[in-house]
Length: 343
Ligand code: KG4
Ligand code: ZN
Image 1 (cartoon, rainbow, N blue to C red):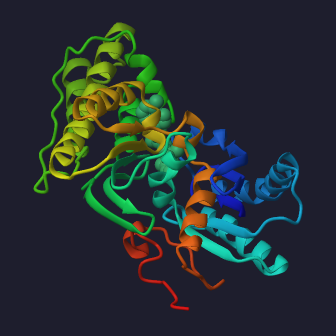
Image 2: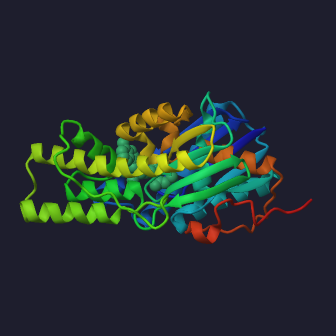
Image 3: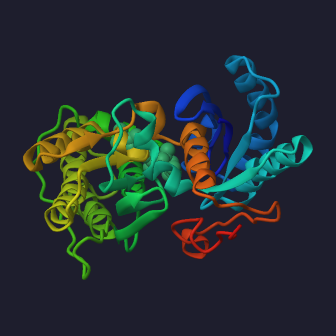
């Protein structure tokens, strides 16, 4: 089945064409102009999506060599910035309506959770997936395309957010994850930042490590920016605390839940220390490890198209009145679950 995917939940406009699980084209246009504001400005994001989405759809179709062969349209319906979501979602619905093609709304996080299937080596059910991005940190037990259970999540900041906020405090710019990783390269683990323990042993919390960094900087440097060598050590120690928290909770879940594979997805899965730690973890427990290529870690429409296809193939059908959702709580984790229309 040929699927067109559209993703506009935050600051990336992305359009992809898939032939089942084969990616024919996947274009991503990043809104770099947010850097100067130190974070994503929602209104500017929506306007930029509006400008780029149609040319990007045309380009993706041109690249794929297809015109009228699209059989399914999938677009992110949430969670994300509501104005930004509405651009891609409305475009997807319009294409579906005008061309009489079925339409599937997709939960962005579910797109990340199944993004390992875009790799040659696929996860095997049941698998354990850690999805870490700028907005979400989830540990999910995935038993099938319409059978997944969140076993842990963050009770405050997301892992990516912790990277972004830490980088901001260190004057490293936005997005903070890659900048902080870079700064940490020459650093030593000289500072002991805390790892939070939560009531649910699989939950995460990153507000403590963030506050602890702030206190450390205030006590050591006042209002001054630390020296470059110091920044490297601080960044390395801070990165290590975040990664250790992610790995230790995942290890606990690996011990408890019998799974065949382990998967690491989302924007923070680009982090080299985290990838390496997951390789060790998978090796220790004899699990296959699936981490998407970098182009499928960050926000992309290929994962949205793939997820849409699987939801559609599982028999779920949606009305064009389906709304956009800012929050995942209101949306529900498995988008299809409460909405399956019995045929
Ligand atoms: O999945 P994503 O592209 O967008 C969301 O859905 O949030 O994730 C973006 C997040 C940002 O917080 C960014 O700082 C983080 O992923 N990130 C990284 C790295 N590359 C991106 N965090 C740590 N290390 C990296 N190399
Ligand atoms: Zn994302």
